[in-house]
Image (cartoon, rainbow, N blue to C red):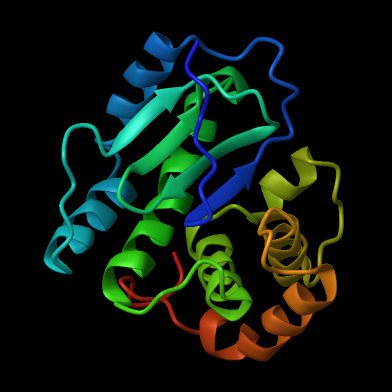
Length: 196
């Protein structure tokens, strides 16, 4: 079984699935191929290429993950989708979209430094806001039933969860960075005209 690399230049999506089950790597590869045909993934792929980044056949890979993560983006390697934490097609689509936003951010910002708490927080805010991770239906399925203000609360919660995996950001530094960049990054919807 292949173990996923966890370099510093990675952004990670966390799974609520315990990994006991999920899909095989081969099944997940098939689900990734289906994701590549969805309009949002096609749109992001096109904009990644327009920004000058290469999107090869191996840019998105299915792997077996020992950690409780659903996937991640690794600079220079691409996107990893944790097959053993994927149950349905929608989960694969969400991971691919979320991580493509990180890839787009990495591509368009020549000086993006994943060890910089503000840079990491900004990309996580954007990915949470633009990917649909925090749609109220997904939040309800996670057990969060708040109706008003759920999206921003969800994004903040998920940004902090991802930032905890960054060895360069203490909890306090991550929270301060997230608050400092919130308005600018939440309102930055590129490459979309507005949040989908």
